[in-house]
Image 1 (spheres, rainbow, N blue to C red):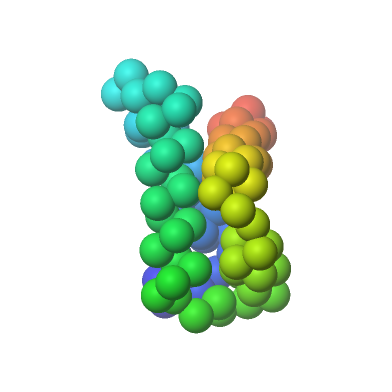
Image 2: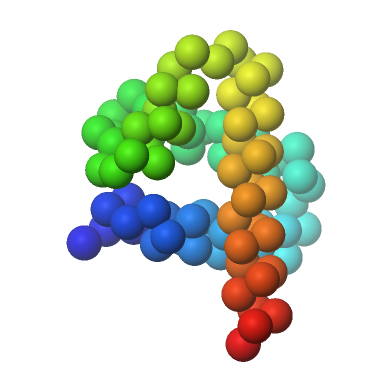
Length: 90
């Protein structure tokens, strides 16, 4: 099973990568641009494995470039919020 097969594993994986990038001193703008590139790749080459992935792909496909950056930022915000909650409850 890959991280793309399970929604929660994917969010955890992405949240960890965002935290790593931030700890290395990358700006939010740089991390967002990278997240957008990941979104572009996934939309183009990866078949959605679950309903959540399908919704994201459909939103990505109808979005223009600016809206894709917003979606990337929102995904980053969602996964870092989830990661923060997880670390606080441990």
